[in-house]
Length: 142
Image (cartoon, rainbow, N blue to C red; front, top):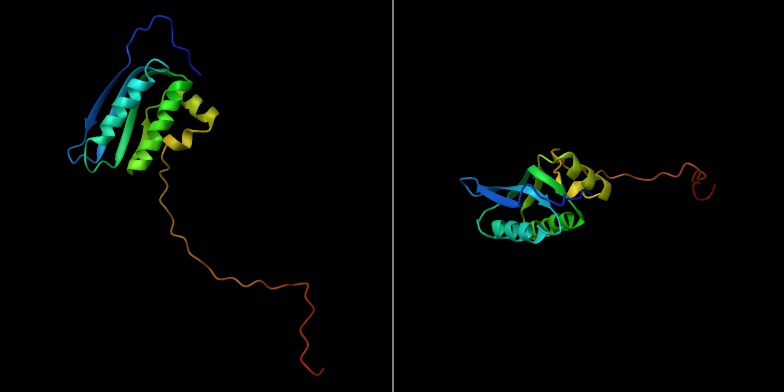
């Protein structure tokens, strides 16, 4: 996990931008997402997803994210639970190396990085099991 320096150059801030049809919101975060800022981040993000009707995607722009600790990861996971409950897809964009490492080590990357593979329709095929070791069936009376 990344440790925040004793003297922070940047305070933690968030800024939200919504598409014209309100289906997409981008929340830009700046600073360290840690013990001190996790509650602010979660409050801002929760307020953002509760406002626009018809929101389908929430993208968190992490370009200016300076680092994340376990409390910051916890806030991201809580946001994932809230967006899932609201039927909103969540994605972390422009993830810095430190965040990517935390997500990979903790096994949580899949929650925040969507799979861009088209869904292949499932085809159900009826199969019949044939026992190869079974003796051949004899006709009655032979």
